[in-house]
Image (cartoon, rainbow, N blue to C red; front, side, top):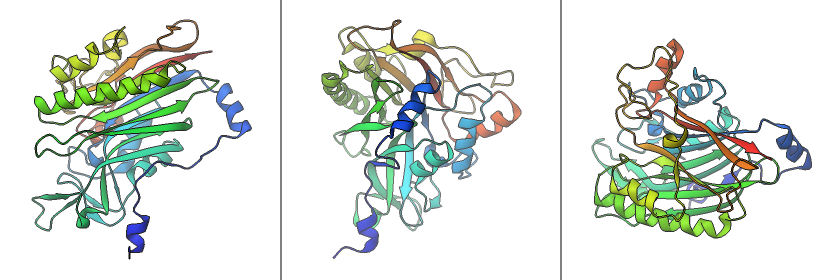
Length: 336
């Protein structure tokens, strides 16, 4: 017989609001026509100073020196949900928090889908992790999509294990935008061991995205976010970019701008998100597979700009160390 804790430990699609009232639909129509999408590896809410803080992550996203960057949709990697006070990953802290729901509440993003890649617990000596075992059932680690707008459909992908490497995954949420538009938002976190692992996962990811295109013809396309742990010249990124007829847009290359601020790190390279203290590697991406009908410029989504949230003022400079990555933001205009 399962314990109450086991019965309640079900990490699955949850929303705090399953239906949208007529009043809420009208409110969406009257709101801003900009769609701000942020991809952010939050490192289990543990900063480069070793301090655990969910609020610091949220404050950085809502108090950045860049204007108008409060997310409409937030794609998070390395996020945890613990139903028991424990340490889930070696770099993490001991806690009993549902991080997806807490971040969503702080940023007023009522629609949430959390997809664990693994369950995990750090052993008593704090030198090893146990994955997907009975004793690990209280801690889940994975990726999440948080949205201001309703999630109407969800699909998930669990990558095949590569040797003995940690399992990884991808998720896609069909999101209802203001008006009649919908868009697929996909989120993933590829393996951190460069080479064959990432290439295998990129092939699986392409097949997953192509399956979404069966319904994408009636949407604004697919926006793919994530920590790819890959430089743009790696086979994994090249595979994603070359596998779609008509192409898939690397939004940074299309509309990337430098928004680092006056006091940004002097060693920061444009578009790079890692490591946070001296960003020299571009590991985080937002890709856009446009609607095949090609309505760009008339109605639907139009890409406005893409930039890295990098602090740039005294408060921002302090808050940016909330994780070992910097967030990447893409702003779209909703034309209708």
